[in-house]
Image (cartoon, rainbow over the protein chains, first blue to last red):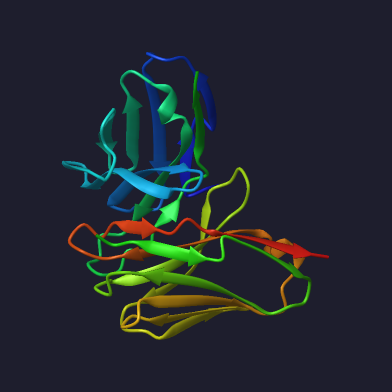
Length: 114
Length: 112
């Protein structure tokens, strides 16, 4: 079984709809991250969480919100989806060791906003 | 602001060739550098992580080097195979947040 799972894997939605992407991990890691990937732009950090009570904005947090429901679960929400949020979204996890944080990625969610 | 660049953006080689992928970064104050592989429609697979105090890491046919002072890393793939075809991403980690800053990747095609 995969250590980092994301649901759904694919989603097509319409402008203005609320969407939630979910991430679960069995690695026992404290730190979780949400990235989006766009062609030609690489991966960019949306939000990250170092533990259940810690939530931080990344580079491109506008239009997104997150919830860390438990150590193993980190959800990303688009309150009112817009077409330029069409992208591939990745969740990642890492241990909480200072200076050493190899990140492990989920399989991604392909989101299309029409 | 840290910027990561990967050259070339795309590379096509015949099977069996040795090849080098390049990654450069603008701020040498990093904790580590990580190389990933991404297959179409799939997530990122971590290949190698080099700590800032290390010069290189090896895993099978892969060897990654790090020259922090010049802001460069290379990924060397020996005896390439069609199964190596994928996009290769490098990312550096540093600063208080430990977040990863990614390059835009090199799309590798190994022709049989």
